[in-house]
Length: 307
Image 1 (cartoon, one colour):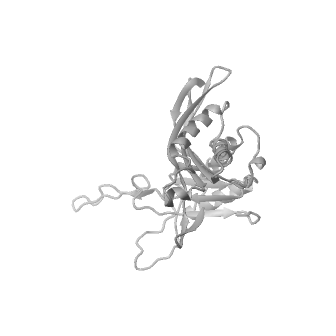
Image 2 (cartoon, one colour):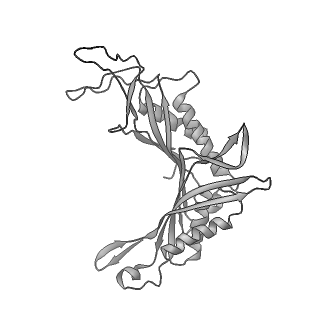
Image 3 (cartoon, helix red, strand yellow):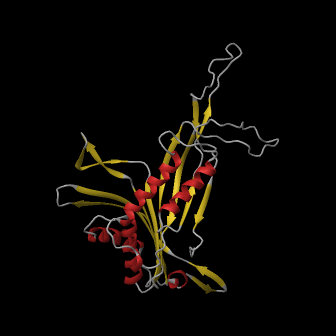
């Protein structure tokens, strides 16, 4: 929030970062469900006195915020998505404390997934995956709500049907044109839901988790194409198609932003004076590197969106 103090515009907020919590639910069938969350809390509150008058009477202590995460996790009797848990926390902080005018809750869910042994799901065994489910919930005391979800670290690669041609060439350009290269990237995708109040959020259990899995599935399918593949003329073109298809497929997503850095695989050609053809590249041997790498990102928003 913003105040004018001593002739200056003063803005402040405070919170607690990296509150790690693991939650186990024991199901009626004897199996367990498990999540691990990394929670960040940021509160906008009327506690200017603590900054300018040495008066801490209006501060919600960050240790209290940490403890609240564990208490609220305990109170959730059924497994829920990080989006739903973020809403639970945001509702608590904006309603329980009169000083708090808005709360921003960010959660990163570690990708623990159930282990399968001989094709059967293990009752209480889990293994760690790669990509992470992330969310940010912003809730004001007035009830205004914004929900953003996404995936981080979705690493994908295809060994052919990718090229890069007819780009600007000048005296600084040495990159050759090609219609045959590897395409690899680590996708970060974030999408915004249209819900503007807690009451408008779908009450269906598992709604956000199902949506996360469905969006991720679409992103992967568009990147790779059918089993025999689809040609990519650039990362930009593939990124746009991934975003376009996502918005076409899901009416309850009003915008999506994609970041897709190149993970380069540089063709290896080795030669020496005595052995000019030691290794001759034939689309088979590469040097993997991601430093430096290209960065490609874009967002798509429906025209009717209020963003």
